[in-house]
Amino acid sequence: MRVKTEARRQIIIDTAKKAFTEQGVKQTSMSYIAEKCGGSKATLYNYFSSKEDIFAAVMESSVTFDVASAFQKLSTETDLKTALFDFGFHYLQSVLSPELVAIRRMAMCDNSQSDISRYFYKNGPAKGQAIAAEYLSKQMEQGELIKSDPIVAAAQLNALLDAELLGPYEMNLIDKPDDEQLRQVVETAINSFLKIHQN
Image 1 (cartoon, rainbow, N blue to C red):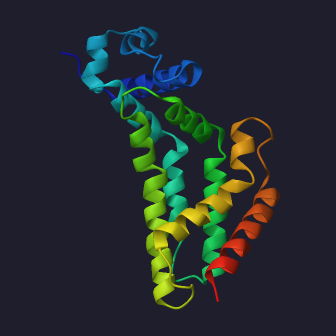
Image 2: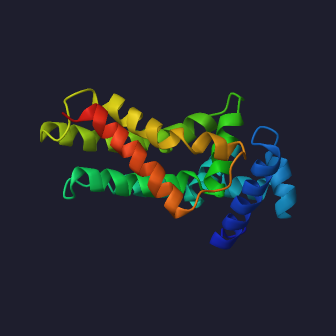
């Protein structure tokens, strides 16, 4: 029996990511990944139990989880507007990275009966929204924001941040914005959010 190696596992992840990006998750079989890795399906299954398991590893090895770190900018130790701005800037930097856009496309285009879209949502957008809702709830309790449903408020915050750039960028209608453009977009989004949620 061959000994598992981290290097071999990474080769599988990199190969699968390329295949998923080029031809879609649904169209990529375990046999195809094994062939491109220069090994057998048996070797592949020694590392991963399913295609969904490989997708999860691709997601975790990408910048997808950098989005979660952006939500950590939501600190009650920083004044509200500064915390929201820092979060918004790092959030947009992450979601507008080409690597994450590719992973979002993989998940959104997967219309099979697999758990790929569900896994992406649960470990990406849903996890981030829960962190944001908890933060906003604390700000409501402290009187910094009008009391409302924090889950809805978190969804509105994300929608305002996504509204101007995410769709056009994902459809290749615009180039990736520079930091100054991001700052302007975030400033507008946060100001709009505060007009709705502050007295």
